[in-house]
Length: 426
Image (cartoon, rainbow, N blue to C red; front, side, top):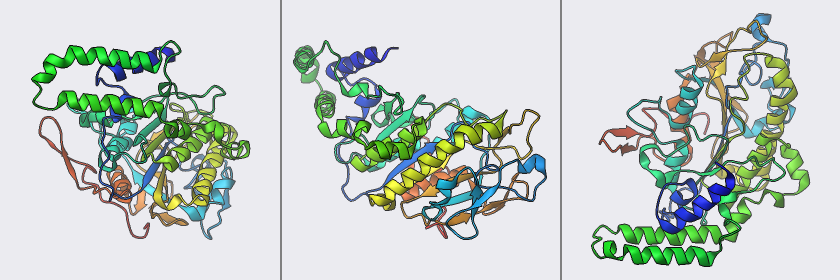
């Protein structure tokens, strides 16, 4: 499907009816309670699974087939060391915490990403809502911005599930690092103007009048509101400004790194600053899946890009006074095997891995939990994916014990019985 078709389809949907599309769907949301915590979340997904052994949980005393070739360096927090290829991140250690005892239950990419982004393993009978969709529902609109933005090549496990399309993400499919980056769904096609959109809507209103006269549930009134909001967002200079990454100084863009993850993190900062509640950054599909040539791939590309992006994001948020209200989560769907394989890579390993947390009350400069001597199992303070989910909700002011009801009537707890990690993290 071409991007041009996508813009045409948006105009058709926004002017003819409340059908499903990420941009249009959230527009039906109404402003919710102003007393909700003014917090946001940036979720950086290292799709494919980052090796904890070669980054944030190095095993210096393990045999060489486990230890690998990288060396540790000190961070700006005494006693905490991380990989030598993350020097800029090491200088930001006082701003974030490392969870070294996170564990999951699947070594399959599809299931792992789903588990990470919903807190549930997938089942055939139900689609669970993603973290972003729940945040959109609970915290609502702020400053006229969509509550949930997805900057990713794919939307797997990032949708609204049984909550319905009103809580679907505004999906930015293009790469913020591309020289021609733009958000097409904020512009009308070249052969359509606002008069045309208004004329089409007027025609539909006339056709709907017979149904409107018998409407006792307010369906047509809700759709009218939907149309008004759709037009308002597309005309909103504030929304367009938030996505205008070109407005950033070249030096700042360079500091984040000219990579999909770097510019994705910069765009995420612009979005939360403008009022977006939840932004998912997922730069490339399975790029961290280092079954072969693990060390070259990490050293030459993956770690330098992460080093620039994550350190710049933390520094930028801190300098702008946003880190205290913005939770930053960095995680893959699982870790990688302790033992290096014959191809010089590491395979999938969900039994223990590392996650980074910063902001929104998280105390930086600490390590929570630990893995065993070979990085194969949790040792202290094991933290399940469900616990991680509960922690994210808790930091955003959402009760992780809250229950929704699926269409079948089945009660679904947000955190799937997870317990938020608090002391000593917060």
